[in-house]
Length: 186
Image (cartoon, rainbow, N blue to C red; front, side, top):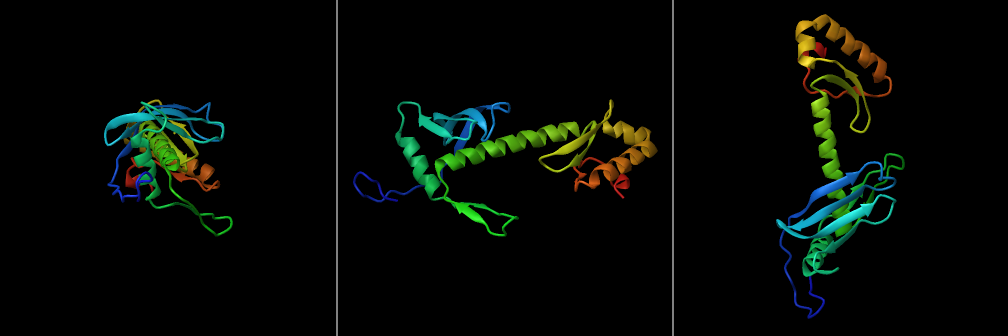
């Protein structure tokens, strides 16, 4: 990389770019994720990031002024990262997009939301059978912990699990629970 002001090479070291204090709006997310967050570089708050959820760009800016030195360094660093590669099962051809700070921030938001959904699913699994895929699933709930159902009423649990699987498997769904004993999975 070259510094555009005096053309001296500058070395970009690994940077830790993070988002904290994320405020996400599911109802405001129409075409893109609607969010606001604090932008951190190597543990130091240096700015903000946001998207209004209407399909436009993710915006980011520094605290002191619009294009701080830290923002410029983060932009240059992100350009050195591998591109984003999308597979297309419809056409059989992939597509790649060069990485930049905006895409990096969008990826951080997506990972944050995925982690939240996974935690939500883990919590639901304590009282429910989940059948589906990562983006859509059916919930078969019980009023007591699932463990109590299979320990106290194993035949009922086994029957309910089997019937639920038969009902939803035709949609290509599968069992998502990772807490059900092997004896009930055969």
